[in-house]
Image 1 (cartoon, protein in one colour):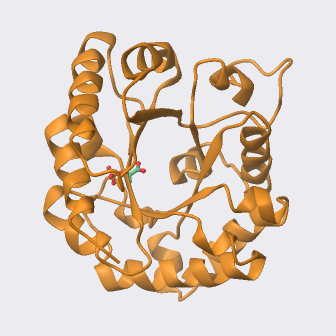
Image 2 (cartoon, protein in one colour; image 1 turned 90 degrees about the vertical axis):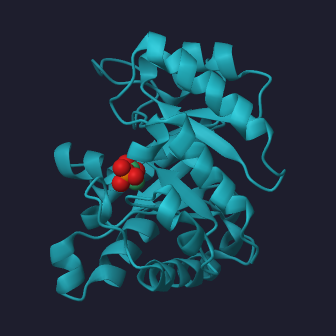
Length: 249
Ligand code: PEP
């Protein structure tokens, strides 16, 4: 279960949130892994407050470059200096507002892996694409752009998050069956890359809340969640984490 704080947080509030999440996560069953992807300036704070806890921390994006004259960018290796485990790549907000192409996202995933980070690759279709019946084509292209640059071993180490763009931050959630259909498609595509790749964790993201979490995570190919808005409150986020531990499949 991974929280994506997006561009939210202030140093004082974060301290409370991180401490509460760490305390709550320690009471979860071992099968549930918890992470939070925070804004870059708070990586050091996350490292200080979460080291020694069961909660891992991550970055929300990395540069496609290893270093150099790229003002404002953050290299994966820099994040690694702060003990980061995860790097979200290809979030729909990056694809939409920063015009990130599938190829650029693939370079970012590659840089993350080289730095020892686990990329959380986000894929998802817009409402127009879904209504045009092109969901699988869009998601297949986004996934393939990354998989084609990775060895089977590297691909087996990533995490994939299905986030329908129309469900992110909108309060609209994909129906569990709708999400499951896409997850099953992703699983088949991953299997084409290799038997071990088919086991990568597949997260669902898009307005997950305590009320809908159990039904979503109960779907056969949904292994966890990428949680935006609801990860900003420890009570909500931990309730979602607890919903995950009640599910077995
Ligand atoms: C996200 O930003 O990855 C996300 C899933 O957001 P929300 O849960 O707020 O829809």
